Image 1 (cartoon, rainbow, N blue to C red):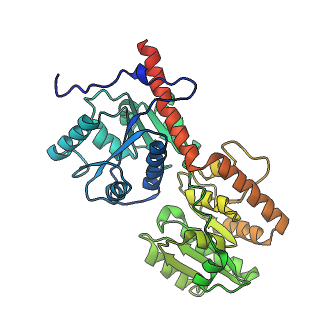
Image 2: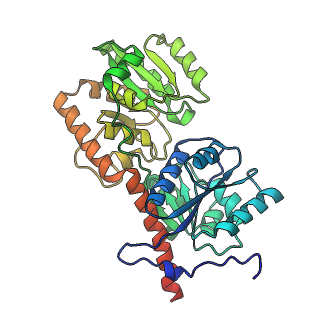
Image 3: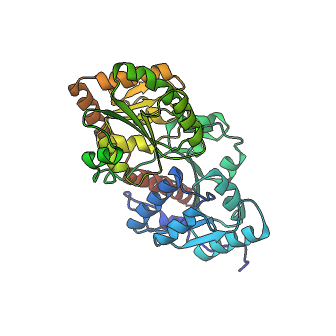
Amino acid sequence: MSADVLPFEPSNSLRSDNNHSQPLRMMLASTERGWHGGEEQARQLVEGLRLRGHDCRIIALENGEFAKRMSEAGFQVYTYPRKGWTPRTLVSIRRAIWNFKPHVLHYNDAHAMTTIGLGSVWYPIPVRVCTRRVDYQISGSWHYNNLADRVVCISTVIKKICESGGVLPQRLALAQSGVDPTRMEGGNRSRGRASLGIKGRDNLILSVATLTNHKGHQYLLEAIPDILKSHPDTMLALAGDGDLTEQLKEQAASMGLTDRVMFLGFREDVPDLMAACDLFVISSHMEGLCTSIIDAMIAGRPVVATRAGGIPDLIGETYEPEEEPVAWMSEIKNATDLSRMIREALEASSEEREARVQRARTRALRLFTSDQMVEKNLAIYQSILNSKSAKAA
């Protein structure tokens, strides 16, 4: 047999009936060196598939955080030396594909599709999918239309962006990100407030997000002085770090907010912080979906958020619409509107706050858990296999 021909089981042997799929060999491909939200979603996906009896393995950048953590989690990890095409990279990719013979090759990012996808193009892998997580315009559609059977979009706005950028509609699928609903269960309000030195009656506003431009922290800081006029006992805590940390600290200092804004950096105690806050705020102007909002919804915290990217999916404006509001929504890049929504949330009656919190929690548990995300991706794999089986029959 030629070294370039990879023997696979016929796809019709994997055809699903009555939603009971045969065990799959799934390889998840990543080119990220660090660990961010997309890598956490990938971890939950392969963990969920493994629990369902599927054989999941990883191909990732060597010496990267993703490769390290997934190996520690007990997954077999194949590595390659660098992004882009080099002889060593190509050999590493081809060897990994040949050894595992996956039924499903899932690219966790667009670069993986060009690096691992092109490196494996000679092999007849039955299912190739690529997850699209960001809500900016795509630079070109050729690789999406030719290197993937499906582009898995994590929000309706990303799906629309891909279609407007030239990705064929029949290649697009929707599978929103999800969170582990048990993650917030251990949060302790007293412990969280004590860790921040928050007094009993102080209002604590919390934002959990990397300190980067698209998260819009500058607009949140601009909103604080107006909030302090009517709520002088308010504190803002920013959990997360990023390339704008020093710039945002300078902005807060120049606005005289040093004693009202806490820069917490990376925190391991997010459940405690979530329980400690009186209001959870996200001020992004670009956002694929935002799983920290899902965490807040499940933790039962009132939410103020912008209408950035996929956030309207979460709060029921664009996906499975809600009849009653589950959060307070602001326009993007608008400190005045953001301040108004935060004040409305702080001043809402306890009955109104509780009603929105309960609707939000119910919605998150119904639509945006990690189990839901895994099942949606698995259904996409199986639909492709079934479609190919039907054509081959």
